Length: 226
Image (cartoon, one colour):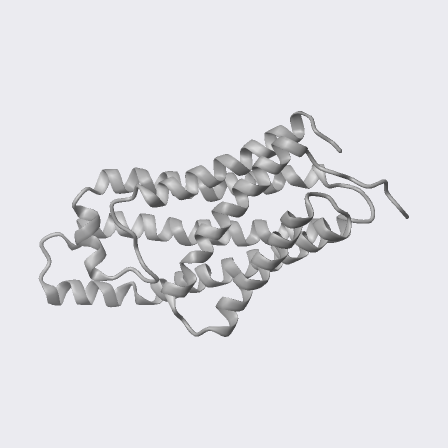
């Protein structure tokens, strides 16, 4: 078992990512749904600066999750498991920053739209919403594919965890199963934002599980076998 500064740093990065993601979301004064709608601007405008800061915290949670995954990479370097670990971490990172970009759009357009729509009539607001319809659609696609990309990575990561006993067996199965479910929900079930929402909270639990496991037990790297 390897337990040192590297594992401690990585463990705390996972935990910090979970804290920033969840509290940035939980303390927000308004949650944007699958799309930005006209009503969002009025809600955000009630306390726009507070909403902006909570969203900044949430977005930095995605960034910190990316940091935690990059930190995990050198910890798990070695033959033969890196052939599975590397693409797994890579796909999770791609998915994480796809989600970060999507949330950055909601953050920017949510705050910008408050000022843009101020004083507009209902007809003018409808015209404005039509003008951002295409971008709205693209960003919703980013959210779905960010989850799918992350899910693929978690399946690979979980497989490596289980096969080479890199972390506790239960955490390996949790990782792989969560990734499979995250992919399956998006691919099998037609657009249904209410069903998608729990994926975020489960991801926060997974981040905490990874963080505390690395802090408490470190990481197990079997001897390399050619």
